[in-house]
Image (cartoon, rainbow, N blue to C red; front, side):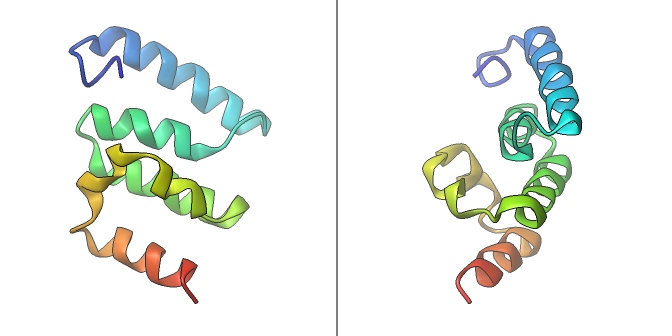
Amino acid sequence: MFAATGHIGEARKLLATLNEMVNQGSTYPTFAGLIYVGLGQRSKALAALEENAKIAGIGGVFLYHAFDELKDDPRYQSLIAEMQQ
């Protein structure tokens, strides 16, 4: 939300905290992926989703419409296809 509303500094602070929490196993990379999307960093958002898929799948990705921006990306489409198998 911060990134999408122009609060880039706040988004980056939250992202740093989330990435630390991911490294500690306290949260899932999907949440960092949401911020990456807001920052326009599609590749990092996709990397976060790919990492999340290894940990817990990506079924919850459909709950977050921010990821709709990635629907045309082959990496995203591959993740969705894997999930549907």
